[in-house]
Image (cartoon, rainbow, N blue to C red):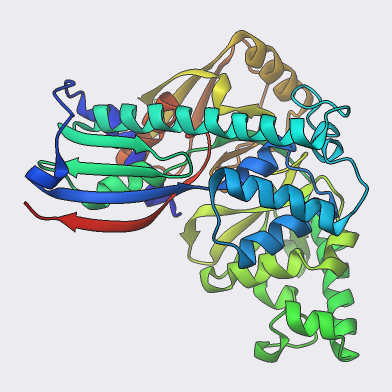
Length: 410
């Protein structure tokens, strides 16, 4: 989902409408019926601490490619697929290894299945509450949210903007702060080497690389990765080249971003890259393309400080430029961590990420105490208002996807 779609979520905070009477009979009054399904694959990954265990990922890939079963039945099929792929391994170990607080190695397979289904049910209950709260603040006067166990049926009546409703329903709004790798090291040590590896495999007609890349469409078959990347190089005095400062590696054209990331996730490249190196694109397209950044950490879903740590967010402006900014206040625990992070990373960049897209990559100029910080970037006033709203409303417990919309006539 693009950034503009995510911003629909914040609108629900800006309406300030009263509660009203939401119960209505769609069959009598007419309206729109929307079926929304949760991402069960994401739920399972979250329960396993976003593990990179190969068998776990292979089981998910197989089910996502060939199964239409949803909800608890998907969970059961997933556990059966794990057993099929690796007979004899205790299923609880896939979850307890990275999520010991929730799952015990000693759990039987039956106990694990029961606990996962119970956890999924709780997430669905939370999602129902969030959906109703969003509709409430959005100002809808006639709506029903029915939890079907493996999906939601949403019934809308009265006056509403369906496009805005889609954004409100599907916005996940996962926000966080991340540390970065040195982009020069990433470019010279890893991307250049990965490019050489794929080029050598392509020249030897390796079948895996042919399937996993688009070399037949290449502008330069000798550089299967770097052909897509315009590096953040700067020309200094006497024509000397140097890598630009900050966390930006370079730019990739919007139409090439999916192919570029696919190449980076191919097995030969994945084995080369450090496990704590991850990539994310900027949320806005620049003249050169989409900015590419390198994240340092356990994964894109594991920020140093996450949205749950934000106790308040409000709009302000830069005193010198007049451009809109967002003031954040962290809770006590996050405030201490933020002070430590900024103290230890003076002169480096910290990435501010919303739903896997980089909003900004500011330099740390000094330690930031007391849990106060300011986000300032290339925001319009509306974007800053909406982002502040997103941070205040909170995220959905698991991603939702609209699968059907039906118009009901009176």
